[in-house]
Amino acid sequence: MRKKRVLLLSEGFGSGHTQAAYALAAGLRELCPAVQTRVIELGKFLNPVVGPWITSAYRKTVSKQPKLVGMMYRTQYHKSLNRFTQLALHRVFYTQTSQVISQLKPDLIVCTHAIPNAVVSRLKRLGLHVPLYTLITDYDAHGTWRSPEVTKYLVSTEPVKNKLLAHGVPLQKIEVTGIPVHPNFWTTYDKNELQQQFSLKPMPTVLVMGGGWGLLSRNSLFEHMTKWRDHIQMIFCLGTNEKAREEMLANDSFRHPNIRVIGYTNEISKLMDVSDLLITKPGGMTCTEGLSKGIPMLFYEPIPGQEEENCEYFIHNGFGEMFQKETVERWFSLLQEPYAAGQTRRDLLTKRNQYYDPRQCSRAVLEMMP
Image 1 (cartoon, helix red, strand yellow):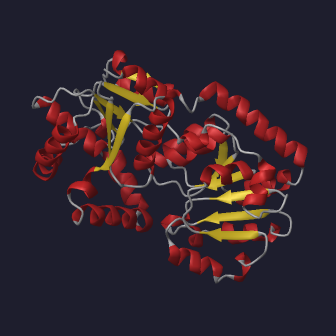
Image 2 (spheres, rainbow, N blue to C red):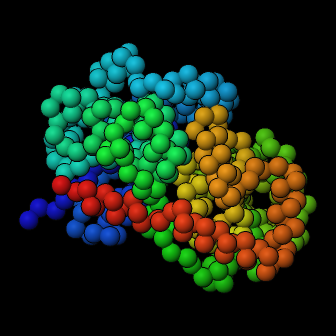
Image 3 (tube, rainbow, N blue to C red):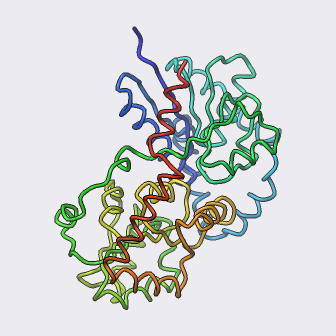
């Protein structure tokens, strides 16, 4: 009997979309090893020269002109992709994507970005009969995600479900599954063992993420944090941005035994378990990973648009606060009171169980398999 096959299509505009695809793929295999999965970033896969160039241009625009990104997001908020964009996608992607699908013969397709979602939707209008599941990877429902050809929308929360309903999406086409996280985030690791693994001291620890965008050096609050470095351990994750890492290490404020400035790592799940506070940009994926771990979060410099919506959801529901001088000082003081800090983490884990089940999205997709 042939194994069931799931094709997951994404794009590299920010790491969260593809992370969600890989997380779902890993979750499906964890729950059902017989399922075969394939993750493809469509632009990079079909056009390895132009695809990465477009992604790089997007990252630079986000870093240099975030207000422009926000304006474009809001201008198109209630609209599906326009005809010109659909025509451009048709010329660039449709024929090759059809060939990829014909070759891989998936039983279902999951799209974690609006562009491949539009591509597959058009193929379905032209006769493709593979079910299309659209996994919205933020805590908002932008119009570009919507298409009549979508079989089912997998969304993060009830408010996102209600936004789709308000735009005429039928109720039977929406399921609240949460955003998937990798199975590494399904369990909690022993903190003492992790301190030994990472050669960390048994003291309050703060994890800072999002440095790969080059934004940490622009915010003076991060340097302000270092005045607590004798009492609080800090781990700065700068991803693949080696230039930003070198700039931070050249600053005397960050050269201290209790401060780590690291590059890319696949140990984020463990670093969240060994830390007591997460400071991050409010990307949908990172916020969901923090939610899965029940770690309190402070959010800095949200990109206008979807990150602002993510921020609003997590702050409104008590999972985080904005990264400001007064919140830093309050949290850093709290972390030096072990019982109070531990109780805060326990309370967040209890609340998480009411809002989110890390396995739910993978289970839902397995149940939908034809």
